[in-house]
Length: 217
Image 1: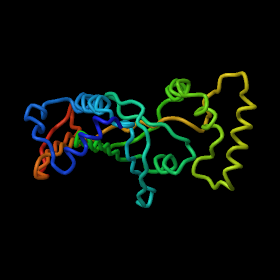
Image 2: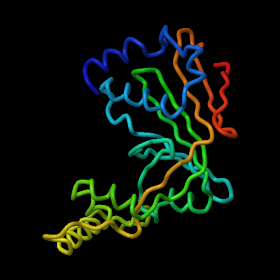
Image 3: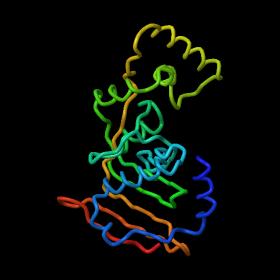
């Protein structure tokens, strides 16, 4: 986080902001509004504004949450990538509903998204994988994500083996690694306000578009 962002956090923390969500926001497209907020988070100097809490649940309803990196969002939904053997992937494949929560403290903003989740195509996963740093590509092959690891040395041995296997070649996408897209059914925008009288605006997907409503803070 930049010095400017750090100072802004100190100034605004717990105080809220004077300008909230104007009535006209209720007529906005929620994906466009998210894009505007996400761009503002980038411009604020926040470290990794793409970091987001992802909540999943097992088939019998046991919840789990972790931080992931959203790689992009568009009218089709919010996309992140993972090992298909990870806990989150296993839960998503068995129970394809999830929630995301972005929190940008400097701006006193939060966005909550819920919806159905599906894997992106192999082609889309491969296209993104090709943009990753080579070390991250090797790591994707070496990691048996969420499985037991004897010690750090075992992981480093697997990394060395993968580096040897792909030496001098491009690293292909592992067949057990790829993306998921959360297709939003509900998006809530939360703007901190003075006196904890926050603005909350909810967009819910409806036939042919979105409906909106405001909530008490």
